[in-house]
Amino acid sequence: MVYYIRNFIASLLLPPGLFLLLIVIIILLNFKRVISYTEQRNKKRCIFWGLIFLLFSVYIFSTHFGELFLVKPLENDYVPLDIKTLSEEKSVIVILGGGTKRGTPRGEEIGTITLSRLYEGFKLYQRTGYDIVVTGGTPPGMSGISEAEMMRDVLVELGISSQDIIIEDKALTTWLNAVNTTDILDGLGYRRIILVTDAIHMRRSLSSFEKNWEYKLISAPAEYLMESEVDVLDFLPNRVSLDNNIRAMHEWIGLIWYIFKG
Image 1: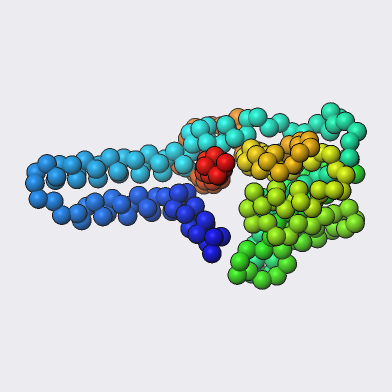
Image 2: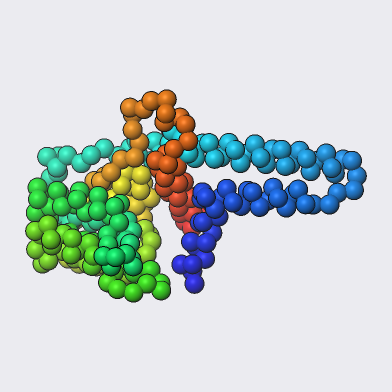
């Protein structure tokens, strides 16, 4: 139940649910009965500014302007990992799941976000030989194997021995990725986690692991959304910017939630 409530609230705070919520509020204001001239004027003013805010929100979320304010601050602090800088220490590569597709003609499939993280983890494994943890569960109501098991299968297909892969197959949130993974690793002698996820997701991921892991944490960003080379078309509404800004807004909401959760 908590899973559904959390996702329902998130759907109202993120586009397109946010846009629909604003439209519903404006429609309700339009049908509100007023008696006095002052009330009527206030009603028109609220509707006018509500429409302005809606249009502004749609434009910001669907253009590169939004990425400058939402995506860039999340990614700026995380540079690609240079393994030459790593000291000799017993380490493990932790790859966070980023979503799956179920019920396709192929059955269960890894999503593109997860696939990019797996590729980054695979490259790190090739260069270091460190063990790998894959983490991700099965959403309620879904059948089949867990996300972590799908991730393991992909890595095995790439040539990694299943003996070098540890599975955490219960977590459905970033916080639980950290809690469950560190519980598994506790007592196994690892002194450093190399954390693999997208740059936009790294701040929240590190925050989760820092609260549950007493040893070293190294970030290894798998994908960057922010592009420095843009043209005038990027400041027109486009699907790529909308997708990027929705993902960024999801991260900001998560970080704010962490502040309240403590």
